[in-house]
Amino acid sequence: MRMYDLISDTVTKPTPAMRKAMAQAEVGDDVYFEDPTVNRLEAMAAELLGKEKALFVTSGSMGNLIPLYLQAGRGSEVLAHSDSHIIQHEVGAVAAIAGTTPIGIPAPRGLLSAELIEPHIKPPIYYLAKSSLIEVENTIGGICYPLENLKGIRELADRHGMKVHMDGARLWNAVVATKVDAATLAAQADTVTFCLSKGLGAPVGSMLCGTKDFIANARAIRKMLGGGMRQAGILAAAGIHALEHHVTRLADDHAHARRIAETLHATGWAHVDVEDVETNILFFSVDSCSAQKIEEVFGSHGIRCSGEGTQVRMVTNLDLHEEDIEQVCAIIRSIDPKEFHR
Ligand SMILES: Cc1ncc(COP(=O)(O)O)c(C=O)c1O
Image 1 (spheres, rainbow, N blue to C red):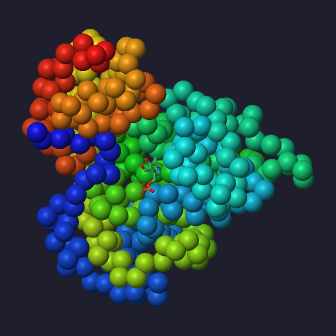
Image 2 (spheres, rainbow, N blue to C red):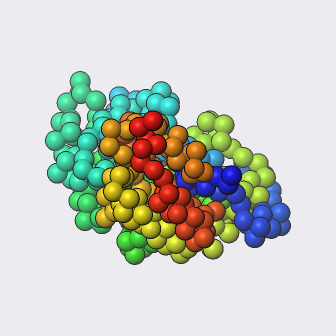
Image 3 (tube, protein in one colour):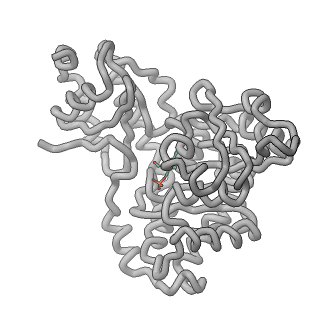
């Protein structure tokens, strides 16, 4: 039985064209700034985001950890959505390594605003932790930040002398879905991380973007964390290929996620807010059924998805084509809802 993998957009394999670009990459020792392909990728990322410099890092987690370390640090607080990746899914590195206290702020649909954040900013009294950094995740749960929220958060941070970091693991999904260009989104944050290894389909790596001085410091912290890579041009070539060829096609992933959500909605037994499917991620539930049981039933029909509590997540990706999505929808239509309660 074929397994349709909707567990994440991180499961994609490099395409033949990407592998060819990787095989042909010119390389050098990047710790000595001598890898021309890494240098090219970094220049490209900085230009796309309208930032002075960029740094190729091993992962989205490292791309978030470095700004937390440098822009918040010991005795400080970082304010982020309570479901944000830095708080929930990065092994507590925010506290364990960056030494900053995470303040989780709940917000509908994951979207913070200046109004929701401001009450959590501490006054500048020496015995209180310093509110140093605001972190926003765009997209969050597949939802795109409205530009007005980001502008309000930027203005709030400036008013309080705080920095803003954007975890843009799926920034390009937001760019494609909202048609707001990457530089405009990035201008609302001091530092931005975006991943090459998610919807863009590269096997490894993320880009951390910011000022020239910030990136110089970030390079040192990357080395401290063991993230100084040598002939990394092989990986950077995949990133360049992804940025050149896999951005506009994200619209297909978004349409596919919508189609699956509509199919689930039409079954009558699955609960999904179709309007909330803005990009490549959708969530659904089934009455009185745990996410684990739903995963099990879908798995037995050849659809791999993941869940927590009662919510199951599906993520469309580069390796799932039109005909695969049709197949996934046909499987969903064929599921007997009694299976969830056996
Ligand atoms: C929103 C978000 N931020 C950061 C990351 C971390 O990326 P990585 O797995 O490359 O460390 C992920 C990974 O899934 C993510 O979804």
